Length: 289
Length: 276
Image 1 (cartoon, each protein chain N blue to C red):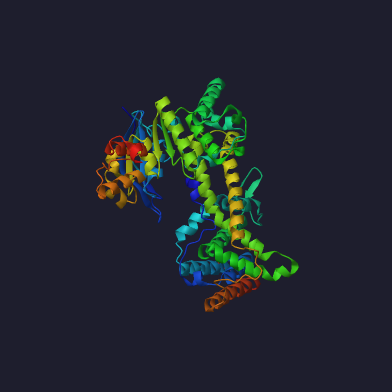
Image 2: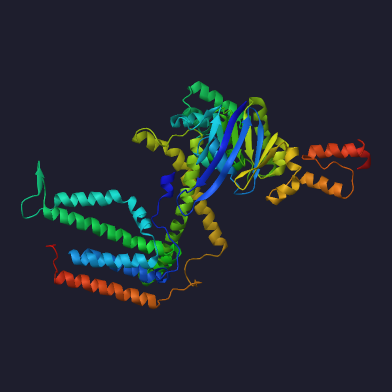
């Protein structure tokens, strides 16, 4: 069953002013329970606008959003409930930290939910564990932490609300490769353990290919295509035309194929690449290395 | 959120009209002169002359009157309050038009109130004309140039102008930042819109703390970036566009001088219409 269903979303910025601009144009899609979705699209394709509709931060000019089969704008007063169900982590979320201690900051969301103190404490610990923040850091000021740690604290702040859908807008922007792997690994673990649906907005085709089970491609304020990584990245030329790309390893394999090596170019992660090479080489990769 | 974006104060509408092309120094001086004239003015005829002058300026500048009204919206409370206070506190000679408890409204009160309101509206529209037709950069250049003589008595003219242009430049940036932080906190269930005054004030902490921190961070980064480009204050600095007075400025000066002369003459030899 779909946990989020968007119907014909259209959003116009600054309606009625000279700066009027359409940011979304008739977007419809569904997110299944427990899915891991990658949302890709070039800058300005409407990704950030789209995700802010899913938890009711923006109200669609036209169209409707359903969470758990309920129109989220049916009752405006309950919009906060929607935000607890659909957790949204913004880009550079570390800039939103404000509390004296890491613990209090992570507790901000659960506190707004009106939970009991014990429940809050438990959720804070759990969320901190998910993102890899140790007990000792909980009593520190968030401003003493490193950039990568701050970001993890901010993500924990949303995870602590135990949302049914966790949306992250470019969670790895500005991090080094190790920081990227760690954050994404944590999110992947969380996805598997909690069973929550996860949507990540990313510019990295590698990340989308590695973690997502389904990819939604946005272009020109609408959905260009959607499908498994294999289905989406098979359309390499189309992706390139709309300012996107395929994973680096896919490029390598396409080139190999062009040069006459008998490989299948439908390779989207490095692991798949290794497997494919082994297959072609008859499993004897070490002997020929 | 919509509220934050509606601030038009200090906004600039690009254009290429004589008013846009005027020297910013002349515009600043003439705006000051205009304000003085406004406070000297007395009597219906003077006000009509000033209104005519302002309308001509608006027409020349191609600024939509709607934009001026929109900017006025935020100040409506102050305007109304001034009007009401003047209406109640002006004592007249004849019989009060209306009196209850110990409050009395006289004809003079109403006249003063109307003049006061018109005066404030003219004052605000006049200054809007300055900011709407002058880019912040030009404006600060103008101020710096006008303050230059005061450097002799150790007024840091360049530094003041630089501070002002940086402040102006970062207003939209900070508004955008505030919007973003607000959204992020709302996503965690923050509620900025309901509750009493105290609760609302407390609800602002999650917005203000990150906003201050980011303002300091930006200031720090900007300082480093300026130093990297060898900024060392205004000494010996040359400009790509140096300020020059032109014919437009002369015409503007003559017009304002004529207006001032007319208003002063009307003050000395009042010309009464309808007894006001």
